Image (cartoon, rainbow, N blue to C red; front, side, top):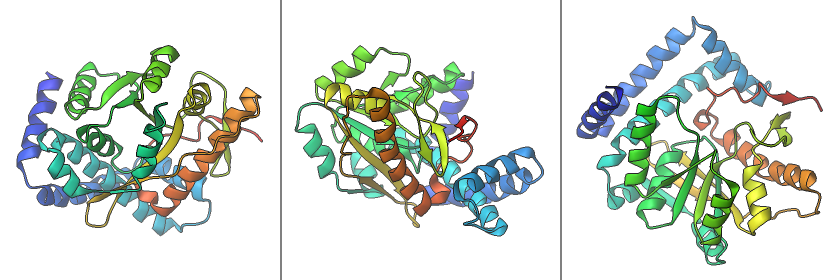
Length: 291
């Protein structure tokens, strides 16, 4: 029943003009922001921001950042619901690509690519554009608790050429995909789960996913950081960074931590430039390690 309801809402969203929907979203974000002020979740978001930026923002600026963040999240949801109705030409009108030659050059080496991103901007739309352009892209996902939501999400992804790889799948499958020249898109900004790797992120020593660096060290695939930036006019810019230059000392723990620190520094840069576009509703600071 939930699946049918989501599909129906998605169909309605695809029919309505995007500018009209974004006006509604901005109003809704203000309403949610106002209502959150009377709940613990309001402090949760703002404390997350303070953990990252310390005294960089005043209380009023953090309030405004919270509201803009909610608006970005809702706009991304609307855009994802509209994805099934968009073809390549329509997506290319909405997304400007910058420095994609880094991705192409890495793919030409024949060892696959680890496309490393964060929960930042509309990351789903960035993957969809690559899928429609014919890139052999797989993305690593964690299954949702709701099977209906999971089914809908993956239908949309697959319709745009983005094939899922689940976190519980074997290392061998991921290595095989990389060796056949595929792209594996991975989010590197949340907690690590299968191996204790810690690195400094916004001044905190946090748990980091070991996968991106471990796969690169194992296969020789290059890590290309990539970000989807929402512009002021609600178009997007998909930016590809140069491949990470990996440290290889032979000490696994050291290599994982030092190379993870390199991509976290890039994450910090983009989050600092566009703070409203990162996923502040996630508790990134609940698994800290003392220095």
